[in-house]
Length: 423
Image (cartoon, rainbow, N blue to C red):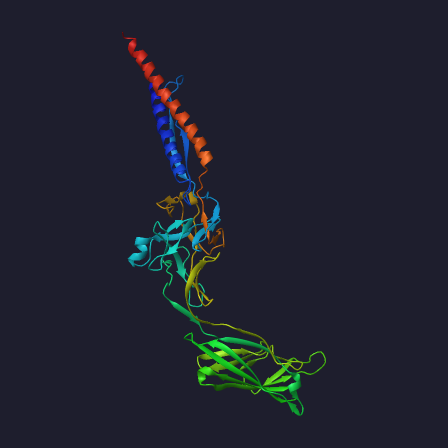
């Protein structure tokens, strides 16, 4: 009977609207949950073709729910450098704390659009919901080795060296000085000038170079370099000649007395052998003008020993350890994970997702390359829930549920009337 099909259609309507109410309530409940992706419930009509062409049989309705993973919320600024979010397409690779702390090799990868990561007692960058950030370990010089992009086996839990000292040896010193031209004239030789330059050894200890400039004739100076780490021994002794022509007066004309191959005229650098290894001394900016000795600038690399003062993640996903001596060290690079169908990802707890057959295979991109977005520190991604829109749908769902209940009530009354015919 078509009246029975009406009853079934009404029941199907109740079930469908109950499913829609569940997704709406979940969306509203997570309106303040960072990184939440809203769920959407759609209705699909069901058609039953009866045997009698002149009759109509109600088929009812079916509900299907989808999580709109590709629709994220807006970004908000925070005060934590390791609050991370992806600006654009893609997600951050994470794993569970249990898997990261088990020490059993490669941890299973999950995905999250945003997270407030902070170092725990073991240095692991993890959220309060126990999601641990994953990244590729970088080489000692900060370069990224060749890792497979279609596999997560090379990804490791990001671990910050909390109780580690760091220093960097000095390998380059550039000294710019002006020597008094009046001290290097024929028959009149002026005073010896001295510059002391601090540098840092391989173990972070402070050492110094003593550089003396002694006038040795017409526009000529003898430079002697002594190294404190070598007991004050001489590690360099060479002669500078300066140009006194119009248009070129005061410029460095040539360097003599150095071993073959140790001076590069193009860069103006001399290679010296300090106690800890080779070091380049830049003298190309030395001038001879006027009657005053003036050290203009001293530039060098290297840092003294320092302790960890903070952690940052740049827009390329590189995790940087910052030290109190002003240096930084690149530890990991966090890739951005992309799949062909973001809405096919399987939802898990704490705004995490796993790859499924519907999402397609994943690929690990460098942040900001390909179709993926960059990584933003000091940022969180808000919930994608539009509370006003959800409340509107809530009213519509309530009315639709009441209407379907009314259909069931009407069918019940009609069946009662049918029963009463017998009386």
